[in-house]
Image (cartoon, rainbow, N blue to C red):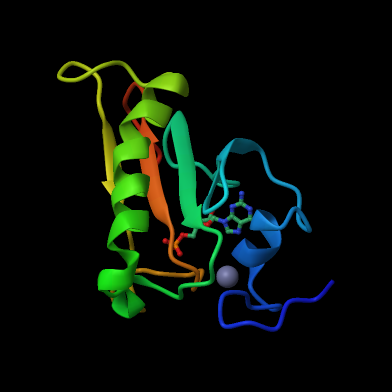
Length: 124
Ligand code: 5GP
Ligand code: ZN
């Protein structure tokens, strides 16, 4: 079935990943959130957390998204440890959301990068 709702964009690569139409290495999934390994990792651990709903970027979020974003941010530390990041403070991870062209955003479906693992990293 093709969804034509504002919550889904047929041309969006991350909507397709969340729907399983493009394969990915899944880390976590629930009704609202999908998490998968970045195809081009900058660090030994590098995964992306996305809402299943198509929200283009942080520039489009409103108070209606507060619970969803709160759940994503509180899930990130748990998944980072599961993926092999060492605990805080010796280990840790970096949480990044690029927004817009000058923010370095390439895929216009809101995503949270979680990067970690032993340094050096390729970037960052
Ligand atoms: P941005 O620059 O928009 O913040 O980050 C986009 C990220 O998505 C990049 O780190 C890139 O490697 C990742 N990415 C782009 N296309 C795919 C894909 O098809 N599969 C996966 N797993 N990651 C992707
Ligand atoms: Zn999308």
